[in-house]
Amino acid sequence: MSQPARCFFMVESQPMAAQRAANFSTAHPLGGFARCAASFFAVVAFSACTDPVAPQRPIEREGSTHAMPTPDRRREQNAVAENSACIACHTDQAREWEGSRHHTAHTNDAYQKALAIEPSSFCRGCHAPEADPTHQAKPAVGALGVGCVTCHVTSPGTVLAAPLSNPLTYPPSSDPPSGLGASALPPHTIVRSADFAGAKACEHCHEFKFPVPRGNEDRDYMQTTVREHARASTANLTCSNCHMPETGSHRSHAFNQTRNTAWFVQTLAVKAEWSDPSTFQLTLAQQAPGHGFPTGDLFRRVHIHVEVRADSGEILYHENRVLARHFDLVPGYSGRQLTGDNRIFDEPLAIPFSVLLPTPHTQHSTLFWNVEYQRAATVGTGKNPDEVQIESVEPLQSGQIPVPEVTPNPQRSTGYQ
Ligand code: HEC
Ligand code: HEC
Ligand code: HEC
Ligand code: HEC
Ligand code: HEC
Image (cartoon, rainbow, N blue to C red; front, side, top):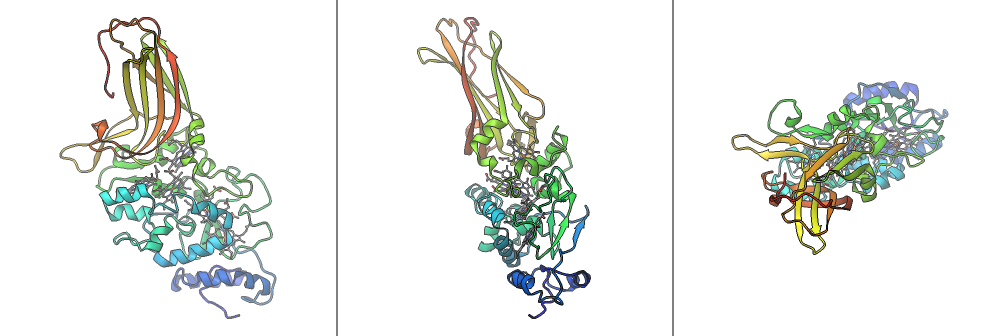
């Protein structure tokens, strides 16, 4: 078999590894990959890449100085080709990733609609990270979205992985966690990095500033998930602990719990009570507070609706509350301004409603409450609830409670607060 000099992704002996380091600087970063992958089994079977010696595990390096995944990679078709090779071997992770929003980051409807409103290289750099963001993404590169290579291959010829020694990452076991079995030899160099097992693997994409230059406060950021996590009581857990659950053989790459209503419902506990005869109170608590609830995109919100209905059906009172980072368009400033943040963090959040019923209030009545998670496409100016366009909704909790037989009051509440 010929000796492909640029065949980085191959079983290699120690001397070859040294040579490979020299090759990195001169060879094209990804060019030889697909061919290498195709020849992998042949390489192992016949040991044809080297002298006929037993194949060894490739060098595994540990450290925390390795580059972490970022947007704006511009590897174009090379990324697509290399990604196909990952998929061909790691079929379990591939199946999960193929159904994930990482894979559809550039093609999903919600993003495409938002991009149409403000088509910018800023957006494309992250949602189509392997494309050149200054142009419309080539279809195949856009369709890759956030690929295996985007997260795992940050420098040519190596694959990032979590340290085996991290008990949070892998339960103690002698089996490598790829799901391919202990006897399988990787055709690529593995770089084990504690950073990759933690929030740093996610931070360059899941925390970022508005494109207009500003400071370093929360208000200057479009997404703040990583700093929220660092402040949370679960800061010692990794993002993957919650978002890449163990499947038995490996960590899930589906990242789809956040699209699973049942999962959402059990993440938030809600207590409903009258704290006094005219104050209805909802207390919302995250079961495992990884960060603010809701987190992520700036238009994510929790919407609460409370209404009192008389037995006759007449609505005696209603009120809405929105828990979110509230952004307004402020004349004279470019971009959106953060004007408030009333989300749920570590502590349970008590939300009182002064239930002011019209006089006379003689009918028997019931209070109905409803809490839902909303993905808003836009909130318009941020001031008028009617301008909000909702993309999708996860129903969280709802209930009803009789209204105490007191509380006459001349006012009637209607609006948002
Ligand atoms: C630095 C990375 C980054 C940049 C830049 C970025 N986004 Fe995102 N975007 C994300 C991440 C991460 C999420 C996932 C968070 C979530 O779902 O709440 C997301 C989610 C979204 C969603 C929700 C998609 C869905 O599936 O519901 C939309 C829409 C969106 N972004 C549009 C945009 C637009 C438009 C721009 C440019 C103005 C942009 N993004 C710029 C990282 C980025
Ligand atoms: C959004 C980033 C991201 C993407 C996309 C991604 N991975 Fe991973 N992958 C990770 C992280 C982070 C870990 C380590 C998690 C841990 O153990 O803490 C990991 C772990 C793995 C592992 C070790 C075994 C396991 O699953 O626990 C393999 C193998 C793997 N990924 C392959 C792939 C392949 C193949 C693809 C594409 C089909 C892919 N990954 C896409 C981030 C990603
Ligand atoms: C020709 C098959 C093949 C190709 C192509 C391939 N891998 Fe692997 N990979 C393996 C094998 C075999 C192992 C080692 C199995 C083990 O350790 O259990 C492995 C190990 C890994 C691990 C480490 C798992 C651990 O021990 O923590 C990661 C992460 C990984 N591969 C990701 C990738 C990514 C990303 C790509 C594409 C850039 C890729 N692989 C391409 C076969 C392949
Ligand atoms: C290269 C950028 C990038 C990296 C690295 C990355 N993500 Fe993402 N992630 C995105 C984008 C963009 C989206 C939004 C996709 C869309 O449009 O719906 C997303 C979506 C998600 C979602 C789904 C949100 C939803 O709306 O349902 C979760 C969960 C998530 N990422 C977790 C992680 C975790 C955990 C890590 C680190 C292990 C990580 N991501 C690494 C860019 C990235
Ligand atoms: C203790 C568990 C836990 C940890 C740790 C955790 N999360 Fe979450 N994550 C959740 C829960 C629960 C939700 C759903 C409610 C919400 O939006 O907060 C969620 C939601 C998300 C979403 C989706 C938001 C949306 O729009 O649907 C993204 C993206 C995300 N997390 C990213 C991360 C990243 C990145 C990290 C690490 C910095 C992380 N998470 C750490 C539990 C966790």
